Image (cartoon, rainbow, N blue to C red; front, side, top):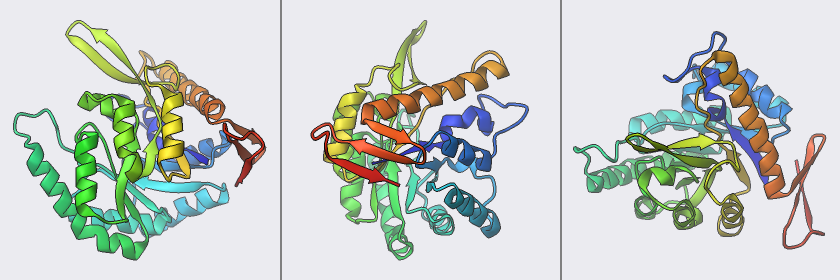
Amino acid sequence: MKLGLDSYSYHLAFGCHADFTPKRKMTLPQFIDRVADLGLDGFQIDPMHLTRKDRTTLRKIAQHAQARGLFLEYGAMGLEPSYLFAELEVCAELGSPVLRTFANFNRYAKTTHLDREIKRAIRSLCRVTRRAEQLGVRIAVENHGDFSAEELVEVVRAVDSPWVGICLDLGNSMATLEDPLQAAAKMAPYAVTSHFKDHCVQMTFSGYSVNGCALGDGMIDLASAWRLLKTKTRLDRIILEIPCPAAAKEKQTLEKENEMVSRSVAYARRLFRIEFAGRGAELISSDDRSARTRMP
């Protein structure tokens, strides 16, 4: 089992989002070096962190990842066919075997009709599956606080293609008021990639909020989640995603984000029983301590 990191884990350092902008923004090559320095096996790119998509830039990113010995996945936002066609080509240039995306609608808007969104998603995905197959890229639709696990499974089953599956996000099911493990169990047979994360719930004066946190600091049963992913999916890599809220000051914010990532990577290694030594890593099976699988 390989271990990777989603670039959204450093979304504050990238400064591409509305909640925080540092004086010096992290670049994608710098993030790739950070992933390698953490001793991880690869990464997933949030689409907001790939600022240019010309062929030269994409090849440089792919070569940088290859030079550091890292696998690469790419992400998108939305299911509109013309958009997905273009993003599939980006995957092909990067050498990404996966295009992670999501439906990108507001589930709780008064104008939202879930039946229409399900039908729209099915139509869109059916239109792009042939091109996905030609390029050898599997589309992974994430449960992103829009579709529930059951609704997303309905979409994937209706498309009925080995080139369309699910990006199983452990925490986002809380946004659709689902139990994380129950939702994960429904999605597990269709998982193409993952976002392994933890979430905490905080009470507010107007109700409550769900926030990202370091692995082990939240309320998700991560040990049970890991056993589920290990036994009920065909995943050969786990992508960590560690969303960090901004602090009051820039230095504190960037230090907190980096600390949360570092601590979460250490937690994942203990949880997955991965021992790192130099550039190599071994997975120790909890069922058979003597059975070791060498990881590149």
